[in-house]
Amino acid sequence: MDFSLFYFSGDGLTTQENKYNLLIESAKYADKNGFSAIWTPERHFHSFGGLYPNPSLTSTALAMVTKRIQLRSGSLVMPLHNPARVAEEWSVVDNLSNGRVALGFASGWTVDDFVLSGESHANRKEAMWRGIQTVQQLWEGEQVELKDVTGKLFKVKTFPRPIQKKLPIWIVCKSKATFVEAGKIGANILTYLLEGTLEEVALQISLYRQSLAKHGHDPQAGKVAMMLHTFVGEDYNMVKEEVREHFYNYLKVHIDLLENLAKNAGLQVNLEKFTEADINSLLRFAYEGLLKGKTLIGSKSSCMQMIEQIQQAGVDEVACLIDFNPNFDSVMTGLTHLKELKDMCNQEKMASLR
Image (spheres, rainbow, N blue to C red):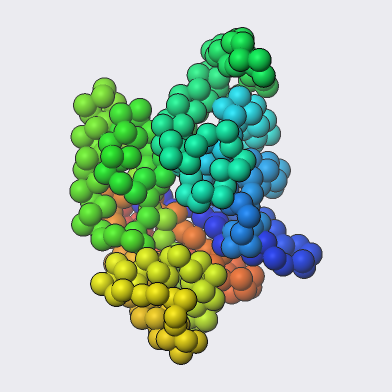
């Protein structure tokens, strides 16, 4: 099982200095301690995740302070971008990092984000697949026809040329159709567990590997990463209480997630009519539910059980979302326990191969 670090929650409202300190220092730690990758997202027009409007910029910074770890977008919203700019910007990062770039693509979520795009929100899936194909062609040195402002077609080739001849690609997947389409093009998968069950994800992974084989790709070569909120400590109950308030605050800001968690549990809620006491009760309910098989929040032994479960479902990598906890010292201490968990997993794998 590979372990990577995932960032999503940085507070864009903060005016304090060194607001990217957690990103930089945790990346340096991950680079030195055998983690496989760092994922930084693309978020717009909201304080939640507001530290991350452009993953090519954050990855450029990380390229300067790391040596071996892969730098991934997690994810780049393809319909919001011109494919030529994507190829150009990330080729710069690939050169600065000496060939450590991988791109995770998504089709987009909120309608508001599409003020940045000439694409329609309704057609975002088609725009994503079309854009990915163009980025791949440009990355590999092909000339691609694009339209100028008059509508006239002309051929472009992007520079600088990247270090990697072929661009590693990941697709953010939730639906069966997206898993199958990702397999069709031979891409890797980034998925999550918050709004479904592990059994459902296992079925989707099986369909993905079938699609890989059907379209001429090695079904075992495709990688599946699962994003999980992560905080590992020595004692389960102590970790649970240490993280509780941070996770409550995280859910309060990410209110659509809280609503979806309630609906998935069979609760019909209208948060606009909730009192503060109602909200607090729902937060407790959601938090306790997430701790039961949907996070890596706990002790090394409890988290090892979760790792074994997702591995049996076909997951190859856990993408550890660590920045829901804003306490720098707490997160960095938690990373030492996460490294120990990673090393335990690797030791078990080596023992099974003997």
